Length: 420
Ligand code: 9WN
View 1: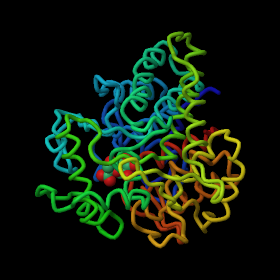
View 2: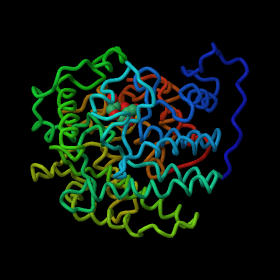
View 3: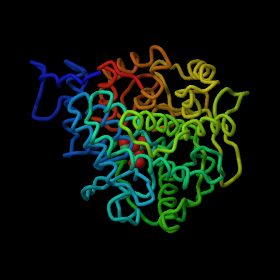
View 4: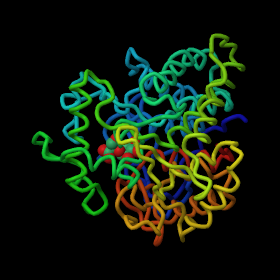
């Protein structure tokens, strides 16, 4: 499919020098484009201008997918800048700090680095690169990304699979991208919050209502982990939790990398890693009685049966159990505005606190082609509430940051007729 040219500004839309990103939209498609342009910092896209003023890894890959529908060269540049932040061991930092900013904590000094964080994030960049090539992106430039992407995937096997499960264990809740999910609660209980050095949160000032953000207690534990990772020479640190969603995303990314290698003639790639991850998911993390996947706390040696959306996300792959898992997901998660990030039956379900209940557009985008009606309902939600970071799954109220990039980028991908 070819990307169509960017639409001209809609006549009559209120424009005040800033992008018009408030619902109701004159044209949702136009508003998506305006938002990405407004959040462009010259080659990379900030997730949100006020709350997240740097380059985040999976946000950037999602933004590239949006850019692919506006300007393919700009889309490739987004991934190039992302890959340029790569550590020598292959990890793609979850944040790249291009410029200093007092608007976000923790900054590089806290991470003990110059300009990047020391953990990674769900590796959606191979899947983004595939979308760019499918839409007609420059094969020569995309081919140059395959080596770095390959090394970023190998990093997971070398440094994020302590028990050799052929699956991914995250070392910090921030690494999962689903930071505040109840999935991490029991492992985080072992981290002592009193060990946190003094620090000042900025996020609570940026999001007016603190009930939509993690608690101070959780934040202290996040900070302790950041320091522990720096103190262990950027090795894993004390937490390691096998994550079915992260594993599924990597498995999909491996398939997409193989596809890219075939298209672009990159013969050095080792084959079959995606298949191995699928076997790891089935043999180590699938729970047939619950018809969903488990988390596994490698440090405690404990299987964690947590009813959160990530426990169903491997159904985005062609696994023998995918249809069953999707059916379960539909039964338990089809709220007024699906998908809640935590089951409404879970005792920790909170419809407004981030990752403990709210609906997120990127999660929906990952499974939407397998859940009929989800894409349409999510677009309706955005039309109604705007480009929020997340949404109340019961009322549809927009929450967290406004002007959030991946909400616009993935909506644009849907509007242009694409699916994962
Ligand atoms: C920490 C940028 C990021 C997303 C994550 C989301 C949130 C950061 C934070 O924002 O995390 O990385 O400070 O809360 O949970 O998925 O990448 O949008």
